[in-house]
Image (cartoon, rainbow, N blue to C red):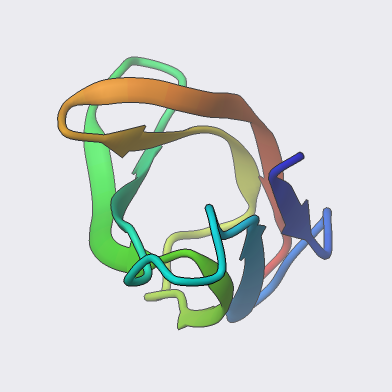
Length: 83
């Protein structure tokens, strides 16, 4: 199960994306953050395991995130940012 924390976040966000089989290389994913109008405000490549992202100054608001692998959504949700 993918975890995105803390929520609400400020300038750092952690992702926990479970790895596949132990012999496999960490899988490549993209984390995308959109405002409520659908405009992409942040995008970064991440790998499976635990990743900490530094968020840009976005302003306090509710955002929608999506995690994709090979352009296929694997997890999504809402993220409150308090800056």
